[in-house]
Length: 242
Image (cartoon, rainbow, N blue to C red; front, side, top):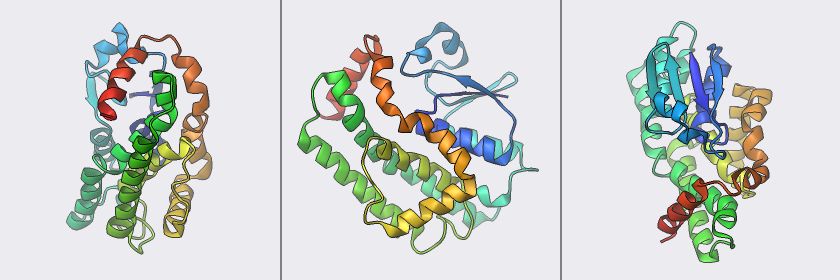
């Protein structure tokens, strides 16, 4: 099985971490997004969507991180502990509830903060408008509040006493704005304690390995200089910030 990944990407990190922690063997195929490798002819033959992650299992190709995680759980059910994606109807429904909610909330807001704080100066050649940054951070705070009050509450993990795919997907998304220099955990002791439990459940060494490149994101601008995708990013920022 091959996994096409770039660990700058949150969804890629979730797939990487899950396969590693469970012990699913795979070949890591790096697709360097900053270098534009997703637009190569070779990768286009793998996925016309031109996004990562991508799973290739023999002749079977699958895109979208949540679908990939669910595929790995079901294919390797003999070695995947039940707590990751419980067989119990209601427990699994709670995992699915979080996975459905996060895409347009925590993921969207965390990604926007990362983009405006980290990539905007490189792409646009100026600092982002303060009011836009403040608005993005405020949206993220609202998502973090809902993560705590709606999903985590006073439980060790999102659906109870054990880690699940919901916690895995949540932590990789939260680390994206952290990599931009924003301390999203400040004043949130409940979230700090949850983060430490998640790191322990995954293994701190593996957690750090998965997040090494994103925490060194300051090297990303040099890789992107004079790349054709900068123009694409300019258009994206103009739409993003209105």
